Structures are given as structure tokens and as C-alpha cells.
Image (cartoon, rainbow, N blue to C red; front, side, top):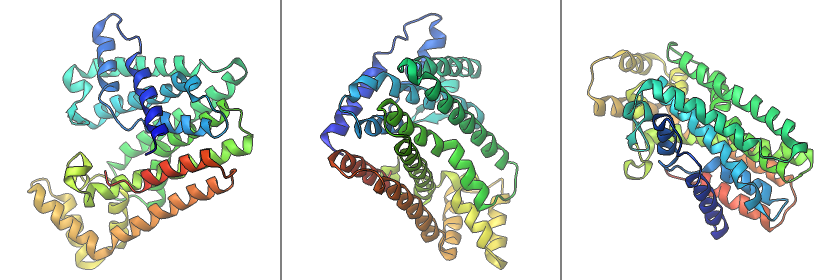
Length: 324
């Protein structure tokens, strides 16, 4: 990570810390401060600033707009945690656990309003374009979340359906982040499209890497319980591939573990991971991840080659080689 990327992250974090949330009723606004200060990679606003920096030299000018994406992202997390009945977020109690479900819903609603307030700060001649792009993206994020919840009631989902779900739920927001930076920098339309494509493909690879790390990651680095997806029968790319490939005894064993209600967590994680190993699911997932990352880099290859593009490439390398 370069010194400039660290500087941009500092600008993003300072902007978030300085948000005026000392308002009443405190029960509505304190949870917003709480979730925004839990940390996180700040990936989305950083991508917007790096995209902008390909064409302009004053990314400081758009920090407040870019952090609107982070506010929206955390709004989705707050509501997702309620729907998933998640007890923890980044190692701390989730908002609905610390306060209540009702407060989590209302605080999330206000966060969506705050996201719009920040995005509306764009120049007058760009407001319609930015808000139309954001509205399309936000709708897809919600659609992806609903499809993900639908998957919970399904015995099996196809690889195609799973990839489309994570494209909507996760990848499109990274695509919008890149597109937003390009729009604000007055980049040519074809460059806006290429950067959006880069963001979507990085997002797809990023989510698949999360699926992989949940099973094969280093517990001390990953930051959450390795094997959590296996324990909860979460539909991931690895499980989707395993159900597609398993036959005979392996298929029977896998489905038996998925049907169990009473089990020892460590035993289930080991057994299902062994099935994944026998089916070669890890290498197939790595191949798919690399395909998406390659598509992302191919989009960058069509942009001008200069030092500013090298910095975006460097940060993309950091993302693609992460182990947590």
C-alpha cells in the first residue's frame, strides 16, 4: 500500500469521524456513529478516490461525496445483520444487539438519507447522472440481498445463480465506486465504463476470495471464525461447486452433514472441508477468482498507461493477494 493510498484512507476516516451526528434523539444517531467507527477497509470510497485520481490531481475535493458510498455500505450492513440475526460485526456487538431491532431499522434508514445528502454534493451538471447510477446500483444491492435470503430456503443453487447474486449484492457497489470517481473527474464515457467493469470484476473476485478464506484462511489473520459458512450451511461458491460435482458416497456424506441439526462444529468443518478437498473445489474456486481478477486488469489495460494508473494497479494487487 503506497503512502498516497494511506493518505487517502486518512482523509476518508477523518471525514467520517467529523460527520455531524450529535443530534436528537440520540438513540437514532448514536448507532450510526457506532457502526461507522467500527472500522473496515474503506474499500469503496478509496476506489472512488483512486478512480478520480486517474484524471485529476485534487481527490481531496470529492472526499465528502466518496464517503457517501461508505455510509450506504454500512446502512446495508446494519440491515443485513438484522436479517441474518448476526451477533457480531467486526468483532463487536451488532447494532440491533446493542440497542434493538427497531433502532437498527430506523438508524439504517437515516444512514440511507445521509448517503444521499453526500452524493447530492456533486456539481449541478452531474447530479442526475450520479443519482441515476446510484439508484440503479442500490436497487441491485437490495435485489441481491433478497436473492441471497431466498437461497436459504433452497436445497441447491446453480453456479450461475450464485455468481449473479454476488454480482448484485457485492460487486455492483464496487463498480459504482469506480464509476463515480470517473464521472466526478470528467473522464470520457468509455473510461467510465471500463472503470466500472474493473470494479465489478474486482468485486466478484473479492467475494469469492472471502468464500475461499472462510474455509481455507488463517484463523489469526482472517478476523472471524474459519468454517463459519460451513457451520451455517451458507450457500457459497465452494458449496455450490461441491453439490454440483459430488456423486455417490461423497454426495451422500455432504448432504447428510447439511441436514444435521445436532453436530460438533469442528467435526462438521473438518468433514466438509475434506469433501471439498477430494472434489478439488479449492483449486476450482481459485481459478474462478483469477478469471475475474484477470478481466479486471484487462479493463485497466485499455486505459492510458501512466504513474497514476500504476498506483491503482498496485492497490488492486494488494486486494487480490490478501489473506484476510
